[in-house]
Image (tube, rainbow, N blue to C red):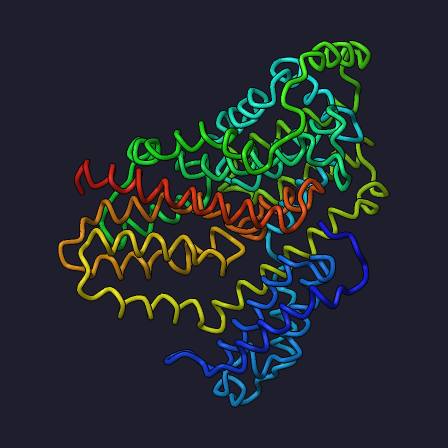
Length: 489
């Protein structure tokens, strides 16, 4: 990714042109002018995130600042502005900072602090060396080892952010340097880009495979029960997802090999070297044991304590323990630029994505779908709704907010079609939740650490996201849905 602190005019002009060009167009029928203007700004921000005329965190800050300054034309309708006592400046400021109060932002921040602790204590290097010693002689087998580790955690970790960002990323990010593949350097592509993309792409598929692997899955199941009167059980969910998810998990290391090809493909000597390095490290140090115990506690709390304590609070509690025991110190945290950059970036993107719902753009988008489904068969409608539901995640920075905002609407639209097989429709939409976390660097809190890892340029990440998003959607449409229909429902 770009590390330049100065503005690149050649890359700044397209985002500005997109935003102004859309804003000058008349709003679509039924959409308030402010909602259309907000969408224009949002489209400009997405374009800027791809081209990076500035650092991405700076883009996020500029986005919420500009939106708040233009609040009478972006955030609020004329009716809202006319209400007695309404203070646009105060309301705009409150909106601008909502992202910093989002628990996902702090869970992701906790993941970065975990990664720092793994590095500082040496535990991350030790775990990476164990993986390399066992399966590191071949890049493909190493990729499968990483994917299997995620699969092993998924049935018991209902937060994909806690799993992919808080548990997997801190360990996997320690592997590339063992192969002399360093972040933010010409060596990033030796193996780092490959192994990190396999890790995150696999997590998105795993989030669809197990009902308990992703918190919004439970929300989707509840909506389906209430609206469609279809009760999806854990086995039903797994066997519905397995026909397309398992082939995807098998294919991801090979597909990634084609698009993010590592220059290190085989290294038999590295397993011998890893064993020698482990011997040099000796037994676990005090700080390594503290970190291992603390992270084990976090994983147990994430698995079993979801109804008692928020995952972000669990992560912060572990950070507090690490600081109090000296395994990590505040100066290291304060000086860790990736942590604070990610907090700012994710908080600003959460606010921008939530603004689409606040202004009514999301509701208008969903309602406008209805008028285009007349005269199509139930099967065609399912394919169309799943595609729309999947691609509309570009408007969201959270799987949970997307599910809450659109699942009831999309499901209701589908059920209104004559002869609609409601179980097939319900399963098709439910399976989409985890998969759509792949579509952008802000699609899920879990994506940000990988995006900001230093192993991808912005263009590389977006290319991978678009390509794998299309592959995931195609697998669901061409394998998953036909299987659902063949089983009846």
